Image 1: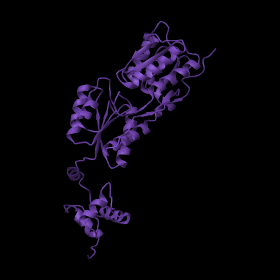
Image 2 (image 1 turned 135 degrees about the horizontal axis):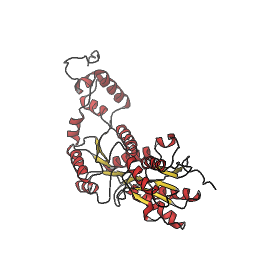
Image 3 (image 1 turned 180 degrees about the vertical axis):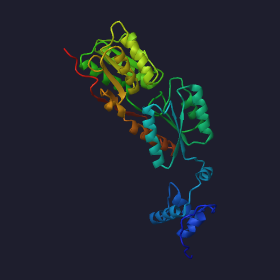
Length: 346
């Protein structure tokens, strides 16, 4: 076979470079070129794979992923359901999901569900119509049917951040995280404390609150219900819940917020009550977002490894694609102490 000169594609209405063109320049059969450009070039030598891919790049060849999906039954897409990407926790997890998926040769399609069942159903149906290969669910609730629906349809899925009994998940041990926050405040001498509890239908809000309350109860200081305020997972919700706590006849000397964004709102409520964060009212958040360490009064928080959580959720989903069995993962939380929880002044 006579070599042809290799030139980069020119602009204009030139014909698209075909796989046959790449194969001809690489002096291999078309089927060999196809395998060399695939995500799993089994049976093709490393030198051939490198040569074919380099030539494809020079020539401007692009694989038709849609056509490949029709042949293999795979879209190479992973769907991701999140309450909202304005939530920095979910945005951080999604970033690591997208990176891990890309490294494995998959794209991602993300949808905001707004923690609303009807909206979730619409977005999930839209994803399934695109023949996605699997779904990572970041917005599961008690009573939610999305995971059950995916199981019924035989679509691989994994829950991330939040969990539901009987479903594969990658989460943090949130009960332990709440316990760590309580142990820290108890050790500092706080006895009258409040909790901004988040959404109790979500495992994150429920288990963090439960772990905290059980630790105080075991220490002999059970929390009255008035000192536990449910909320959405947002800064305005943290402000409102914090105001409720600070308006109690005997306000708490410390507050545990089950999300750093809730803790930000609580800071505003403490300020509005004429108190100083840390000096007058201790504060503990959860997730240890990057902003926690950079606030005017750096926030004590319970750290969740958000990046690892996202990566492991993709790993679990990929195992499902291969027909392998994956187990749920429970990552360990870590207490990060900063200026919002100084020792009590005598």
